[in-house]
Image (tube, rainbow, N blue to C red; front, side):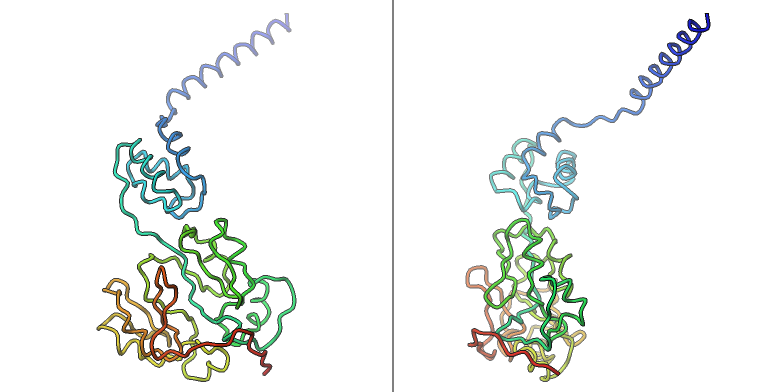
Length: 288
């Protein structure tokens, strides 16, 4: 008799829980548009975050809900964005390409170290040892952390141990920004061609003993630029990109080439008065 009662009690409890689950499912059910799965499969699955969303799934949800347009995905091909637009019945949308920019030109041929770092081949590790040993404290350490974290093969180290960004491959994911211990990378619209390729905060020509292409805060670029385009802040020129910045005049009198023009086809262009760098090998290490 006791066994029968136990079985009935257990069966009744199971039945009651089942009813509660059915009711909860009906009350708490959240409808998910089946188009989300379709759109997600049409995305490149890079999960890079360049679109402003943490991954392709959240971005697909935003596309289906109409929050954004396919053009926001800079990783997908033009054909891929068009296919998504056609499927959802929306325009692709115009989105300016974003790329990683490096605020340093101090490769081994123009910049020197005060000390030789020996240890893990990593910028982050080197930076923990007296800033890395570079003569310019703010300069690139050249160990290639940015190259290693880039999942899109958009960064390579040149012959002078300086990162070079391939703008065609760059997705503006921001991994290089996060990994650089010197905070030299930033994500910029590709139209930001007037560029300050230096983060040195010291004023005066003394810094040139450590890096020949460092900014000396002479202010010529600010003086020559249209009103308000460039201001000097913490001994560095700052470009106001909210103004018309398609202007090469500010680079012309820069004596070191610290402010440059980034041409998509020709590469880095320096001003007429900028120093001409001919050294191919490394500068000697200077111990203080």
